[in-house]
Length: 62
Image (cartoon, rainbow, N blue to C red; front, side, top):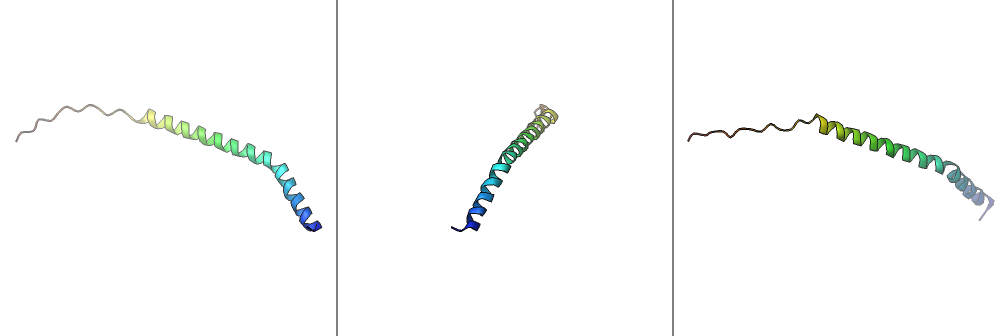
């Protein structure tokens, strides 16, 4: 293993340590936003859908 390999590994580990918390927070934020949008969409679709009106039986003459 050369010095370049060791420095590349250290750069990768440092980048993971620095950016991993931000990535986790951002993914949680996006998941929460998606859940909120999904729930609000479900609530709106059920509130706007009227119940079907009961139909009287049709008299058919044959």
